[in-house]
Length: 126
Length: 113
Image 1: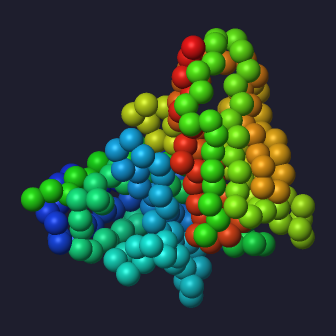
Image 2: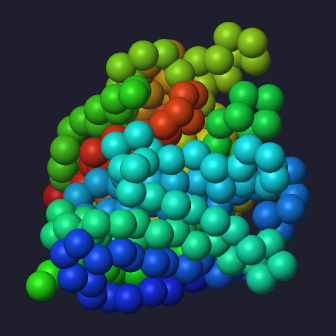
């Protein structure tokens, strides 16, 4: 059974750094074709992909160009965890943040998300 | 970036009737080398995370009722629910995975008439 769960603060102040942890089970990030991504959803709005990390140790990260300068994604394969940090938080970053397992199409290096966590609502306010 | 545009925004359909949601991409998501469309559909019920319904434009995931079907190719795609059930009330999103960054449509909120 594949599960993912997000954890982290529910409230951060403007300019602070957000750190979110995704703890997963039922799969390994050492397995070729597997990745974990972060997607956010502002209240009442659409989904926005943020970042992805995958099995390849040499080149294992991708970021959304719109927020790339503010994001860092890392993995701890032994702990089955993926961590996302986002710097310089702003009220417009208020959203539910989801982590999700990525199903990779290795022939084309593309992916979609086949399992999702429940999400965690992060509010940015002074 | 490939822009995904869904229509209509918020259709209302009677129980038992057919519901169709359209998704258009700003460029083709058909990969010529394998003739596959890199298009997925997700369902998000209130208070829940998205659920993958369909990948490759028309391949239903395990456990998805067969009243859900996907069709289309290139830049124009449809998600069809053949006979709408009350539990199908949700927001539906398309996503392209042809190119990076992956992108989602703005969502279609399906309601009961």
